[in-house]
Image (cartoon, rainbow, N blue to C red):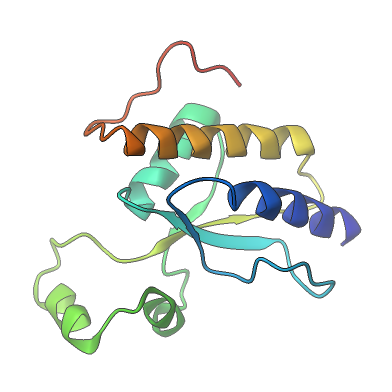
Length: 140
């Protein structure tokens, strides 16, 4: 539990510095906090961010509504009208978020890879790249 708290605090402190990253959790340290951090990057779908993290850095995260649709809808501010639009047209991008979680097997080195990759995604988004491909000079 102590390792999980340490990794969570370490990650939260660094995620807050990434422009365009929206956290859906309290940024304050709490001894009762579990090692779960939900977030989104402005301009990048949760699905795309999760795919890039997996493909480019081998980082497994969850994306979507995590079997908690009403709560995620509330956090994302999705109105009943918008929800009805998505039900009517299943081809619309699905609302959701990315969730990273920690366990006893995780290390600071792994977290640094995640942080470096998510920062690179945010930087590329900020440059308005329409198709994301990590450059060959990206090293973990």
